[in-house]
Structure formats: C-alpha cells, structure tokens
Image 1: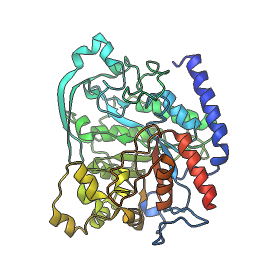
Image 2 (image 1 turned 30 degrees about the horizontal axis):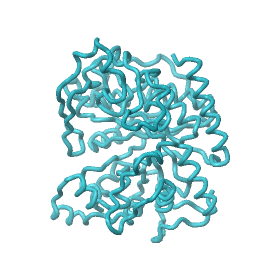
Image 3 (image 1 turned 90 degrees about the vertical axis):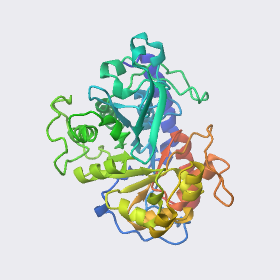
Image 4 (image 1 turned 45 degrees about the horizontal axis):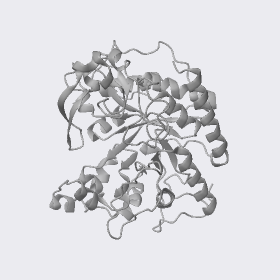
Length: 432
C-alpha cells in the first residue's frame, strides 16, 4: 500500500503539473489504428508543417508516450510513475513486460533487477544471483549479462519482496520514493490505467512492450507461452480481441485474472498497441489480435531499406526506431554499434533510406512513426552528431525538429517539459 504521505506528495506534484499543462492539452488521445483502417497518406516533399495541420499521418498533433511512466521523477514502472504520467496528461503510459519463473507477467524494463531494486540487500534472495546469462534478443543480438538476478529465475512471491529505486547513474532524479513501491504485475498495471482513466475522466493508451520473448519462452511446455499470456490478459481487460487460435491453445488454466471486469465507458477507454523488438513476436501479435503493433528496431540493417519497410508493413502499424536514424542515418548508427551488413543485400533491397526521407517512406506505406527516447533535459541526448547531420543543442531544438518532420508518437521522459515545448511549437505554427 502507498502511504498517505506518498499519495499526498504525488497528488500535489501532479496537480501542479495539470495546472501548468491545462491550456496545452485540448486534444484527445489518438488511437493507433490497424493498418487497413488508416487513410492513404498525402505528404508534401517539404517536411515543414503547414499552417493548418500537423505533418503527421493523421494530420493531428503528435502523441506523447510516457516512457516507463514518468521516470524523470519517480522510480520507473512504479505505481507512482504511472500515476504521475497520467496526472501530467501523457497520451499513452508504457509498461515493459517480463515473466517470472512461475509464469506471472510483471512490469520491468530489464530482464534483471539488480540496478533498479534493493535485491542486493535481501539475504533470502542471494542464492538467485547468476554469474552470467546469455539469450537471443530476437533482433539479431545475443545479450550477455553478468552477476545479476534475473526475473525468469524468480517466483512472483520473490519479486514482490523487492522495492523499486531510481537508477543511481542519474543522480539528478529524485530519490525520495526509493524503497516504497513494489514491482507490479501486468494485471496491476492495467488496473492502474483503468483507475486513472476513471478518476481523471480521460482515456489513456496502453502500450505494453514484450521484452525478450525467446528468453521467457525457454523451457515452457507450450509454444508462444509468453505472448499468449499477454494476449489473454489484455483481452480479459477489454483492450484486445483474439482473432486467431493461440499457439498454446487453452493451456493457461493457472493464469490468475479477476473473474469479472466492468467495461470502461467508451469515452474514457484509451487505445492499445503492442511493442516488440522481436519482429517474429510482433508479427504473431498482429495476426492473433486486433491490436496495433509497434515494430521496434535499432539493430537490423535490412529494416531501414525500402523493401525492408515493405516487409514490415505487412504486419506493423507503427515503426519505432532509435531517434538517431532520423538524424545521423542508418549507416552511421550501425557503424557506431559495430554492426556489419551485406552491402549486396542492402543494395538489392533499395539501399539505406536517407534520414531526411525516413518519415516520408514510413508514412507512404501507411505506417506511423514513433522514435525513442526523448530524455529529460538533464540527460545527454546521445546523438552521434556526424558531420552534416542534425545535432540539437538542447531539448527544445530536438523536439521541434521531430515535430517538424511529422513524427506521430514520441517516447518521452519529463512529460511536462515535452508538453510545454509541444504547446509552444503549435502556437508558433498556428496548429490545433
């Protein structure tokens, strides 16, 4: 339970944020539409926004996604982080999904918990630390992490012993709420979104990311165990309809879900979307539900070619690359990560799309654009700033650039800061 002191402090901060943002929040959350329902794009060659409509695929203002809730002020993925994001009027509130040893979906960004909880101080959990673990991230990269506690090795009861903390690498983030909040289950996250939607009379989008499906499906008795439990949970809460038989069939009798869920009023029920770096998982989610799919990518060169986007457009509704693909470009980004590519194959697929043309190419295929991540202004923006590329000097310049090129969604931290810059931009350009 959250103490009265915690709740009061959170409410006070949130009310102040609402007052600041009141005049900048007249538009409602734009649903992420399935691809076949999107209108064909009609995009000018010049990326400058017109005086009457945004340069997004829908013509409406960009949508703000609270990255892990509001991690600039609260421990990420905590109850407080999600409430804070709602009070600051994010359009979508993001959870990252992991799965425990006993099959419970929980919310945490990393597959391990040593850097954002007090696990190192709990003697009863010391035996669960592993010297090393490697797994296939699903995006062409083998991930290896050492000396950590992994969620897939822990039961839900063990996970609930932990308390969340701010990442110590970012000392400017307030630590007042360290050791207050537990790691949430996916069910608890959905209950929070329901509650804030009712309390604030505003629809908030749910946009879960399935982290490392290949890791969480290892050793399970049924195929697509991780994906299917996520699908069943989201469907139970009314944010998804199942459109094809699930790979694991009906073998989830142990999945603990509330017996009855009162449907949200249509005026306060926000849209939903799936996210995954594992494009095989993304395609599965698209073919088995009516929920829009966000294809995340930063490690696969073929993805950033014309034929690559053609392939992705068969199942994805939104494309979400690392933001520097729109500034420095694919070749520079891959070189910086020491990722090689088959030059002949890339040529046959149309070559790397230039950064200034990437939004237009994505929109032309009926997909929306959702770069990540736009950090709090205290934090470096992490652009390569190669010669001749866009290289922002501050966050205002960064966000104005992405508003101008037609970005549909932005994963942001410090939501009030982003909303103020968005309002300034709209007012200067005469946009709704």
